[in-house]
Structures are given as structure tokens and as C-alpha cells.
Length: 336
Ligand code: GDP
Ligand code: CA
Image 1 (cartoon, rainbow, N blue to C red):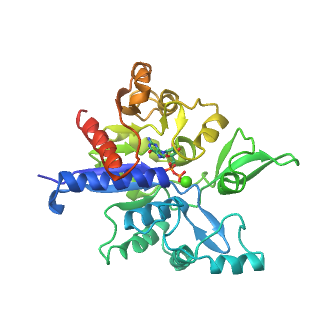
Image 2: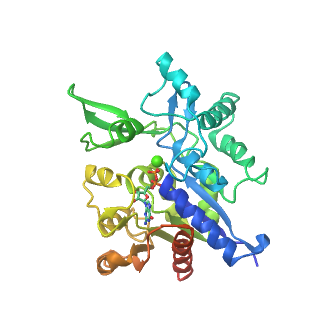
Image 3: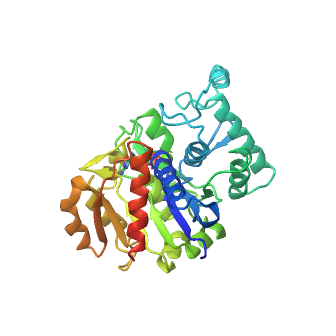
């Protein structure tokens, strides 16, 4: 039997949890690596930034560290066992973003990545090289593909008292805790950018396309905004199954509700499904949608949009529940 190809669209922490669950579930279902499906993650790079002369890619790194098993589980981001000596020196020089601390081990990654980009590698190739070292050189269980090789950065329109201005998404998110009012996100650099042939090929060859329960606006929404992605999804033969990041009207972790309300989308699993839209209708992307059992009353509302919907346990509390959620997405995809 030919190996299946699975593709998952992800942001950072929520995406990494889901993908780790997917890997565990596939290992359980297919003990023999020879029969285990290939997994490719298409990763948001809209949160990327130049900081202290280094190209920093937060969502790609959350994915890489989590899948390599070296992430800081307690803090939720960065490397475990981290120190911050270099960051303190940078702050003393007034270089970088003082509200965006980069640990020493993490800075090693950013220096390596920046060196590769400076040598002329594309981000896709740099990520391939960065991910190869983990697991004693065996690499990650998932292939990571940046959504684009172009520099596309999400900026947020705010007013700090001097009229409307655009600030980097990470500044709005981390420095201002998403508390500065906004009504607009802009992907700076999107014009003239496109997705990569690797992303297009992965979507085309997929047997199932999964949307992780990542931030619908600034993680999944940003990937969908890259020219070529929606077209590839529209043409794909595989079903597109989304997992709701909203449970009982609340974001599970973080502040994604601030992003939804900024663009006028209600914080509910049905409203997010409507925001994504049905694939068979104009501009939509979803064939199937998983909502939480707590949101079972949303099923008929979403199905009326032309999206097949199931209610399943959606909390990724631990390894077992994350694997079970990924399993539910795989089983649902197999029904199409
Ligand atoms: P970020 O880039 O680090 O913000 O991470 P993502 O965009 O990948 O994911 C953030 C989203 O994950 C949040 O908006 C949450 O709603 C969602 N999320 C986090 N934990 C869970 C969970 O246990 N279950 C579900 N369904 N969603 C979750
Ligand atoms: Ca992110």
C-alpha cells in the first residue's frame, strides 16, 4: 500500500500541540515506520521579524522545539533549560526589543538561521537544515514548510495617541498583550509574494488536509492570505478538515479572541467556521469542521453553511487527549 500524505496547517503553540498529537496517534496506528503516513506542516511565518540583526521565526521554532522535545512546556514557548545572558547584554546596549526576550539557546537557532539566509539559502532550505539535527540527526517526525520564502509580516493598525500607525504583530501581542484597540491586520510584503512550489506540491499530493486549532486570523488566516494557497486548496483532491480553536465561546489559551473581535468575527466555533467558509462555495476552504462537545448545538448551524460537522472532545490537556483529537480528525477525513 502506498504511504499516505497528510498536511497540517499550523501557527505556533496550538499548532505544535496538535501536530505532536498527530505524530503520536500515527505512531500508535502504524507501529511500522515504513507504513506510517508522511506528515508535512505548512507553518505561518507572519510573526517573523528582524530583531537585533537576526531573522526570528516564532511559529516555525515553536513547531521545531516541540517536535524535537526540547520546548519549555511550563512557559509555553522557547527552549527548556534556557538562560538569558546574551539577551541581558543586548538590552544593556539598547539593541533588540526589550519586551521580547530571546534565550541563549534560542539565539543560537536565530544566528544559525540568519547565517544560512545570508549564505543565500531560502527560508524553506534553511528550515530543512535546521530541522535535520534533532533526534540525533534523524530529524523531526514532521516536515516543516514555511508558508512562503518571502518576508511577509503581520502588522497591526493601532493608535498610540499620534494617529493610526502600523506596529509589528509581536509588539501588539507581547508588549501590549493585544490590549491596544485595532480593527485591521496588514500582511506587509504580501504584494509580490507567493507561496512556494513545495507548499503547492504538498497540498496537491495530500490525502488529507487538516487545519490545526491555531489562531484563525493571524496564524491560519495569514497562511491563507499568501497568493497561491487558496488556489491550491481549491484544486486539491483531498478533503480539508478544520479543528475549532474555540471551545464554548472561549479561546482555550491565549488571546485569539482579540484578533477575532478586531475583524468583527464572534468568538464561537460556528463563527470561525463561517469565516473559513465551505470549500464548495465561493472562496471557502472547509469540507469538514470539528467542534467541541460543549458546542454540539453549533453543528446544525455550521452544516447549514455546507460544511459537515462533528462534535468531539477538543481539549488538548495532555498527550493522550491531543492524540485522540488528531485521531478524530483523521477518522473524519476518511469519511470523505
Ligand atoms: P500561537 O501562534 O503560538 O499563538 O499558536 P497557534 O496560532 O498555533 O494556536 C493558538 C490557538 O490555539 C489559540 O487561539 C487557542 O484557541 C488554540 N488552542 C490552544 N490550546 C487548545 C486546545 O487544547 N484545544 C483547542 N481546540 N484549541 C486550543
Ligand atoms: Ca504565532
